[in-house]
Image (cartoon, rainbow, N blue to C red; front, side, top):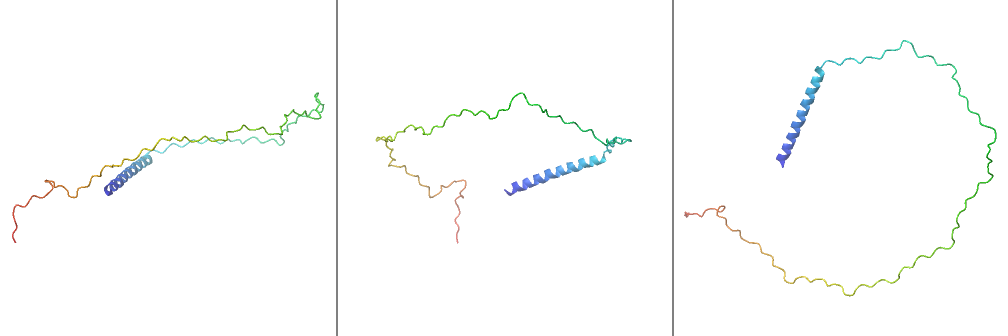
Length: 143
């Protein structure tokens, strides 16, 4: 796990240093180029703007007609015909008050098996593998 982190850090350092080198070389190339030509300025007009008139013309407002319109104004507006609201509430439909009964012959639940399979036991001794076990001693040691 530590080597993975070390590899990741080394990779990030190498990528960031290569990006920094590319940026530095690009900025050096820009500094070594010829300067850009100057943007031409717009000519300054020798004569200024014309002076504003001292009195601005005022627009004339339209006049309101004083003559009466040919249509007479009604004294009272006509009232619409509204339907009458009933005073008694309508009756709601009746719902059944009896609850249906549950069926009496329900299916039976299956029973659990009584003889469960036995769980195999774990071996207490490991078998000897000839390749991994030491060879038998052929010499006897004497004290």
